[in-house]
Length: 92
Image (cartoon, rainbow, N blue to C red; front, side, top):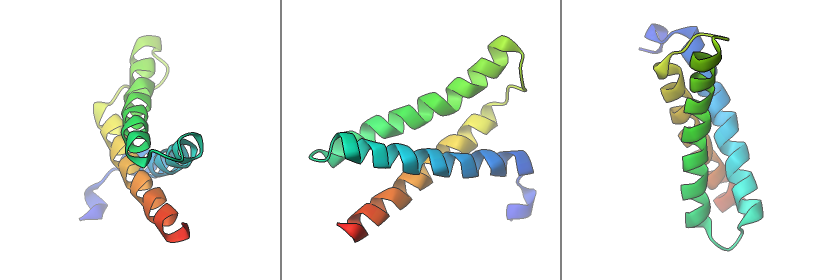
């Protein structure tokens, strides 16, 4: 099943995992008392950053615009946020 996924999409997915985990950790550090608000803000940032890079490629012509790259990054970001939440619940 995973062999059908293009290598380019896999790279965006893995980058999204890292982005989501780092942003979620930063969100916890900035807002330690309100985890729900942190999750909502980080989810918005993950989506904005993922699609923002694709819009940058479209506007500047540097790179190839592909909406599915943004989708792969956003899915990876959500997965990374989940990993950070699991790690945070386990550590604290």
